Length: 166
Image (tube, rainbow, N blue to C red; front, side, top):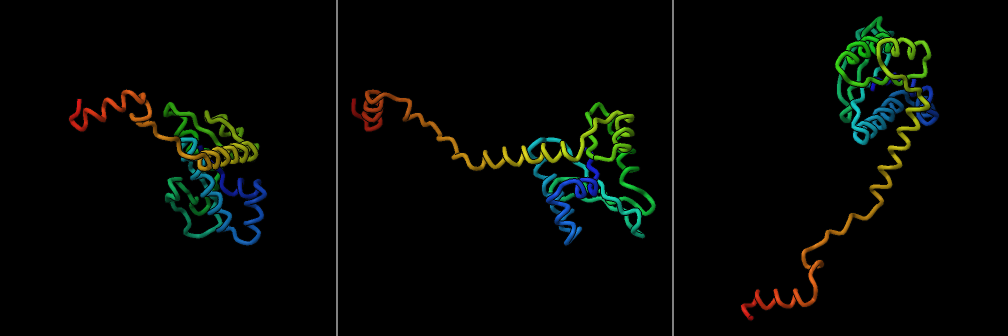
């Protein structure tokens, strides 16, 4: 799944609010959500951020298992996403592009990728978070022991054998 990072930040109210105070906090929040979503869904997630107006920009790193790409100078996130969508679609894998930019959605679709809007991804992330929370809230299943499966007579007989009594 290729995610247009700033598009998600601008579209998700909780991240947009964070970005008003700190864009870095909003990016970190998005990356944390995407790391949890990746871990839960099993989908590989690549988040791309525009850095085309930042001289000397252009980096790749991992954050919580999620691949993060800051574009190079004079390169947009859309260009990187389009290129990756074309490259990855040829590898017999289903590629999804998460953006609400309609032009980008059409280009990604033309390159063989499936389109996911920011709203659809937000819903999927929330559902994953809720399922994770439910799993964590459930008490661990009781382990059944061999002892629980035995009748009282069988337990008594085995105890006699253990003590050497017959």
